[in-house]
Image (cartoon, rainbow over all chains, first blue to last red):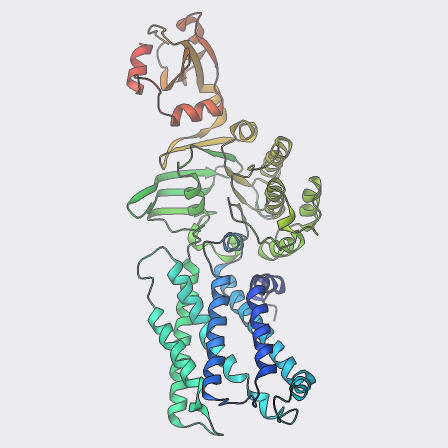
Length: 232
Length: 316
């Protein structure tokens, strides 16, 4: 089946949007790599209460930074991109893909540091931790929770940011839902709620309500994006 | 035009009906009713704050009208179908790619956005001004940036070109070359160009139609050829007595400058040929320039005789 060209992801557009976020991605990569190298314990959930929340806080701040860099309707670049002839749907989809690519870039830096001898060598050298390299298998699932939080948050934050930037009343619509979503994601996924081989019913319920809220905000964001005013 | 479609007479490709835009309690534009037929170069002129950019942004669907509607290629401007959105090229003031972007990257993006984009044409246009596609946008001078973005827009072979101050920063030769490229594009492919500018001498050479805006309203929307045939500029001494220009001559506007007064008169019935005889030897009658027309329609009169009625009285 031949899909129309305009329905397919475009590498140039993704790369362009990804490149816009390079400064944020670079800082996040350095922070993620430093955390992996310097954290003296094993990296699995629950890490430690404070560290878990710290990781989630990092995810929140990183997501906000990504969205703010990419979706500023008053910037010249935003206006340039929105007047090239791309459809609004296509731009929105590519923004999501570029955000995902930026997150995966940071995740890659973390994975490379964790799964290569870099961390073990350093920690052995400074006698920081007795666990390496033996803990590598345990740590394989560490990134799943942060990635899940990114998935919940990025479409929601895109919606909130675009909505706030629009010159229309009711800019806070959806803001409180997004704020609840972020707080609930961080608290629920950053602590021991999802510990253990099987999840309790209330964990599933929490996860389902988070996914629903994120889905709702993503749909609102997609619809709003069709009407977004380029304010420059 | 797309390659399939050919120019089709007087079909309006740009249309507005009762178009208004408010910012808070301030009306920036409207109501504006326009119909621009296909295959024209249209000059959109007027003083700063006249509403030109607001009109263009509404036409591009960048902002929502407060009232009324704007249509491009027969579709509401805010809801252009995906297939039509690549048929409109826009060059906006301050709408610029990031500094790090290479011209080549911008070409790739444009190719993706517009099915008719012609990379070889874009490269040729860039190289006309010594720009290589490997250059970064941030390395270019202001005029080069303008040229580069214009080249990309023209190489997209759009049905509609909407340019806001395309000549800003361009040297006179580049300005002339750019307008000639636009003229050729419109003539060869039957596209339509709407160009907002303050540099009237250049656009006058290539435009078919003019829209004069003032205080958010359209003061004049006509073919330039008609204006050239029907409108004359009359220069009289400052203290010249009232004279009769003849029947069927309408006074459009009046301006005073040091030592003289300029009247713009219009007639559709050939009465203009008789003007020099009727107005006397000290009246200099000449074809009107776009700049004079624009100034006369938008600038306040500078002395006590401030309104058209007063000027009409003087002519009588």
